[in-house]
Length: 190
Picture (tube, rainbow, N blue to C red):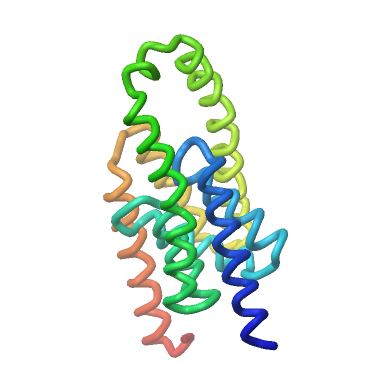
């Protein structure tokens, strides 16, 4: 009975990652937002703070954010097999779509209707990414941890106004986080 549940959950994981990947336009943050809706809110398989951790790790790791998030999510749910199932579900749709587009590239490149449709879709993508940003910021603020809130504000100012590289921001926050953990450990708070 337990084996059937596991197979059913793996199938649901594959179908969910496949569907989300197939119908998502706009990159990693869009799909991460949809992962949150599906796996946190709809299925209840993980908690919201775990999804935030997955997002942070996926973003700061090399490679595409959706693939990184799928690896971590799948592993959390079912170990290595879960990672493989989630990754295959995530990479299969873009692989198929890009393969088809490459065959008809010349026709797509010169098609005004497709060009206009892609421009209009950008507005929707911007709205979804803004939603992710607002939710992530709200979650940081809800922690009421002054250092985290301060880092978020400084990181925003550094990237938006001073065009500081995202990698510099990520590694700086990683350094601050590790330093905080080390200091808390020395104080005996961990």
